[in-house]
Amino acid sequence: MKKIVMTGGGTAGHVTPNIALFPRLKELGYEIHYIGSYTGIEKSLIEAQGIPYYGISSGKLRRYFDPKNFSDPAKVVKGYFQAKKLLKKIKPDIVFSKGGFVSVPVVLAAKHSHIPAIIHESDLTPGLANKLAIPSASKVCCNFPETVKSLPADKAVLTGTPIRQELLSGDKEAGRKFCGFSADKPVLMVIGGSLGAASVNENIRKILPELLKEFQVIHLCGKGKTDESLKNTPGYVQYEYIKQELADLFALSDIVISRAGANAICEINALKKPNLLIPLSANASRGDQILNARSFERQGFSMVLEEEEITQETLLAAIRKLYAERQTFIDAMSGRSHMNSIEKITGLIEDCVNHK
Image 1 (cartoon, one colour):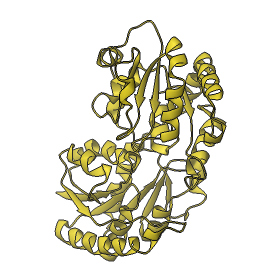
Image 2 (image 1 turned 60 degrees about the vertical axis):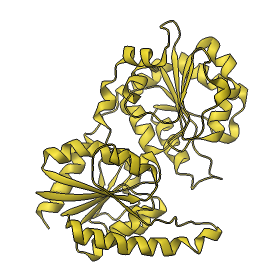
Image 3 (image 1 turned 45 degrees about the horizontal axis):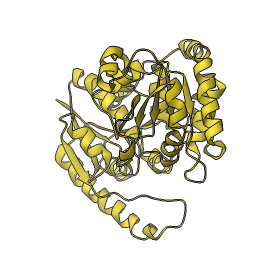
């Protein structure tokens, strides 16, 4: 039996595309193993899939000064030796990485163990973790046409991002029942990301009384970010993170507000949901979400409101505009040809394994 080791973590966006590949990889006869961090979100997401999971030491490499810059490289080195030992034990035919800092030692260990590695970059510009891993990779899958130009020509392949197929078959009425909503008002879904977007959460809650006059609101607010004082508010439901029912909640939603992580916006786009993107500010990140959001805005798929522009008035106005013009966005997304990312990526994996 062929074996594959998958890696990636830190946020759900570094994990769910891997999960989207599982069914096809199993059909192709792969035994799947997963290497992630000890306590990251990937651990619970992967274990829920019944896949063997191995935790390794993981440290973040930063572009800015932080006291942890002295201790984290040691964690990465430790993670490298742990990954090397695991690869020797598992003996995979290939490693597939979705990025995030835990993936760097795994890809480096694969190279030094003479195991081919494929990495996937969802963002428009490669993150630091993937930049460090690219020299050790056989192929680099990318999501945006713009990304291909910034990668080595012999490695870059435009594949798009794998979407969990079950998201496409949600049941609107099951979603309505789950939330306890009525059929007389449209539904707005707010996605704060798996780590929770504090400013998005706060601003939505500030305008909630106004919003609830026109919409029912599903608020996915991230771990530990629910607001107890809003419990039992009619027309408003909040959840830390949803696994099983997510497809039904998407089916129920008329419009969506989200951060602009590449994986999240590709899922929203595949579902053709009119969306308002609030990218993570360049002050709090490397600015990749702003680039992702602007690319989707240029293609007519999304509206964008930058964090610095948010006031109660601008947010409410943007939501109303999005709902009023929702058909324009649906038409633009319907006109986009969606590539079969799962087939494209598993095809690359097969090629690498067969030509080892």
